[in-house]
Length: 403
Image (cartoon, rainbow, N blue to C red; front, side):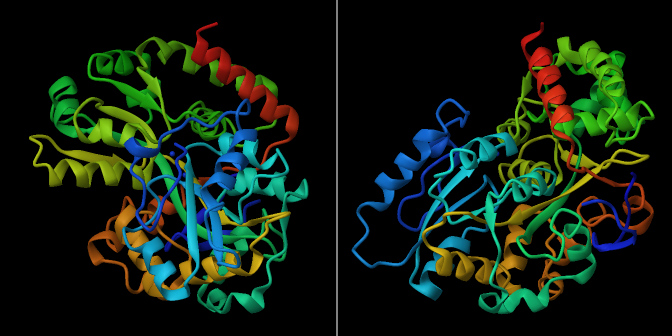
């Protein structure tokens, strides 16, 4: 069903059911995408545990450590060093760029990770499949800061809020090199509509300067279904076939499918239209401004509605450093820490006290914290039955390979 939300990304008048590269972090520095990018697929997910074991083998006997697997571009510069300094616990930090990559790793049954950060539309099924262990809330005193309205939304994927703690949330929408887009379409063009991407006449005009779409079926199909007037969380296979026809018509004009690489490419002018995560587009905008580019990058929540999502921290079943995992989760929910993360990556958080510390330039941006009139049009991406997940993935592979 459609979800109706009100600001601040957390107050719901109708409770619904219910976003990046892999690299190894050494020491206390956060790895750059260029230094650490390794695509994670089901074929080599088994090797991740080995890589992680190699990274941790040199730790002194008895030394405290925590192994974290998170989305790329999702921390502030001082998040991990600050945790290590505050707790004395070493962080081994790897990153991924799709929920599918994380799921492939979890399904090996021996991922080696103590904290992972799935999106709720995947996490719900993973919880049902026994991939996570319950949290010990006595070890997370900062739980008191979590917004009860947001936790009510997360409870649709985690009844009783026993397994998940929100890391971040955001929307999926359109990112533009606005200067280039206006050169193509005219200064009066309305960039805040799905027609910019899903209407092939418009998509063709952007072909020369580059279109990028998130590389995850579960993030794309709901937006297309909504665009054609269907339930964005439909479980009717016929609806997905209709959505596929829309995607096939714009496929010739799409340069790439990427869930993180588009950030730098949009920032340096190699792309001019992306379907991406809200915070990622704002990172691209900031990088373009910092390097004094002669164009403007901006993000739009398309009129009429767009997906909203939640990423959550969870502890995998079989994690070896459970106490340290709880310490990491608790540290992230320190108001000053989570506010710094939001200020750095432009994704809102569920921490009520942290929200008070967010930079007004971020907190007052309606594309980051949508006002009520926008928020009420957003819809939560819900967990899908296994047969629909398989259909989505089959159609997605056909789209990407051009079959």
